[in-house]
Length: 292
Image (cartoon, rainbow, N blue to C red; front, top):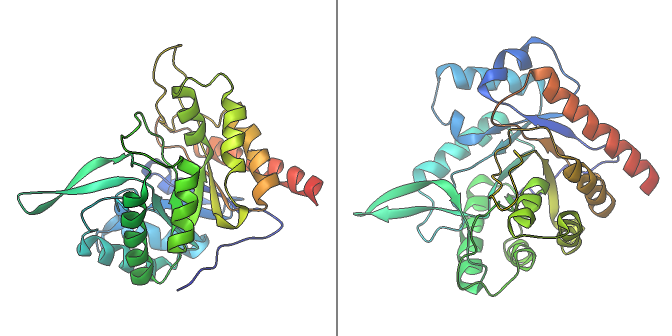
């Protein structure tokens, strides 16, 4: 199984590609190191989407980020899904492959049913065994190390006996996967938990993760809400100041980890997205030079 995750003194900085920017990404070679796409958007064989992805892959390394694998599901990942993902891996030879620590699949009348969202897990030994088994199957099929992302959650499942960081660490140890650490998700969760020190609690979260497990970082923003309201991880704003501060802390702890700018809703102009990537590069350059 391939376990290579890019690590170098200069951080690889990428952006997520959405439909509105297809023309932009092909028009001129931008100063970014990789492009991330949502795998499921390109499962269909043939067609315009596949043709565009093929063109993009000729210009940039590709990261495949899945949202529907449901690695924590009690129901097995459908074989058809894994075969579609395997075909996409063979097509673009991605530098990274990732999904989430969540469940999405169940069964109704003997047929697979997808929840359409990333539902939170109970952090316990039973879930640990289940998700590790699903990750092992995925990694064996793809012959790639998978990166597992921490999720934003709006409730705490019952029957949890482990902290989130202890659970993710145990999954990585058990399955051999890596971790995709989403800094915005940590902030949103701390904010919704009523933390009086969101940044401090988020830093403490990062400090509980071993550097050798981390294969990628995600940066994003969310829409601010009034006191007492639930913050939604909508990826509809520039990266927040607290996430930029956490990014510097993460780089000091984890080193030169590939970094992605996520922006999924209320999409800005392509140049605005690239300016966010440039800001990440400047912070990484400064932090890693100081660290050296």
